[in-house]
Length: 401
Image (cartoon, rainbow, N blue to C red; front, side):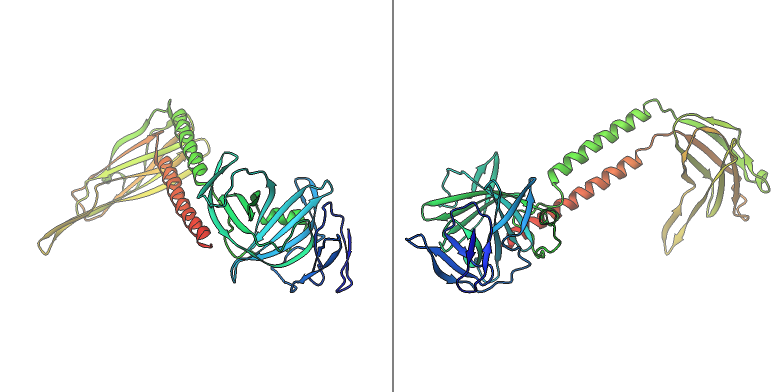
């Protein structure tokens, strides 16, 4: 349809498949409507609006593999600061989409049949097996219009909105007439892709039906599933695992002051596992130290570990105290199968004449739940954090209106 504006002499050319009853000039904002003789006459003039990088009439976008053209743009508000844009899009088949944008958040809608009347503003409605909560009902005012319309855009309507993020059911009510729309939040990336542009309205608030980054319920189900898989995997990998004690001996300090204690060779078979080493020495207000080298007899690769054994006690100002212990445990992690021996260097405080022995034991292939518990703790903490973030997100969403 070609429409020459009588005010600014700008001709707007656009192929529209509607019976146009209102036209607003995209150039100067002059509004025309059909009279009784089916002629377009001057009706009003809108002040030219600059609204948040709004798209323009004639701009094309691709949704669901169909190319749509913006044939109409409305900018509305219901208070001094809350404003939004509504776009009417039509494809070559005459099918419609309606795109709503508010504070940089987008909702793509289509008109639906909804028999139940919502003029009394029920708190909830049901649609497509979903329950929608009443978000708001307002009486918006029209600030600006541009393009072609087949209805009276000056009619004062009531807008009633119900949400179940990321979905929305929206109603426009004029008198006893009610028009319903069903829509879904659409991401900013999808809008950029659809319009093939990076110039889109900037985002400033949480959207009416903007989904939270995580679905908490699904996250809990996924983590529970992972926990079960971890437990089953741990059981399967360890069901035939047997502990193997590779060393249990007492080492006299005086015999190894200038040399290392070398254990008999031992062979390990199976998947990698930690080698747990336990040491004991009868230290009393003194210390001892043990240095351990695990030697792979095939590759001569050595893994070192060291541990202090300290135990002190006494009486200060009439109160007894103690610190440390006469025994310690430590691990050499990830020991693979192979043939090994241990080289142990014991030492103690030179002035400690009462302590003569260091007792050392080493066990391989002992199943450990430590990593599993750490994983479960991480997942639990993560879920709790996400839950409270989602609560805060919803409070912000409902607090915006």
